Image 1 (cartoon, one colour):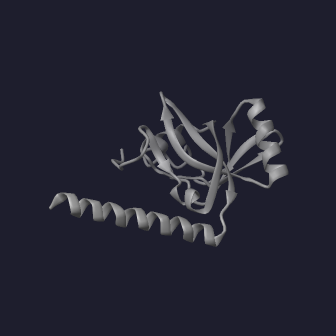
Image 2 (cartoon, helix red, strand yellow):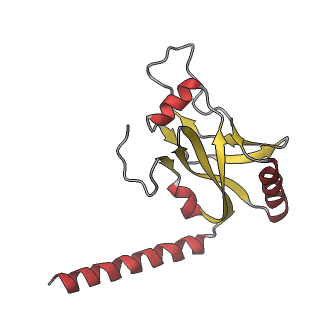
Length: 159
């Protein structure tokens, strides 16, 4: 198991790049349909969400370009394709809501993190609007300003 420091307990993988590139407007929790070797790789923390996205196809939500590394202990014939499209499990009302948001407002479905809830693998799916370059620069400037303030407060109170 990887011993990374995550913000949420049970988190296996997080897509931090998505929060940098998009304004997240709404978040949904979805189940993941995985094969046996995939779930074992997810438990080992061998998931990469960078560059992945979801689409609504035939009233089903499908996750594309999510890389789950092949499980080393399973044989050649029982392993999975690392970037195969994976079905997401959502309620019918949630799928119709996502369809409306994506079609009318031009939003994107971006996976934010993979985590375990009990023994089930879940995916946090964000409805996102792309950031402009000046928005990204503004966020970086705010983050650096807060770091400078923290540093100044730390040095002032420590001496």
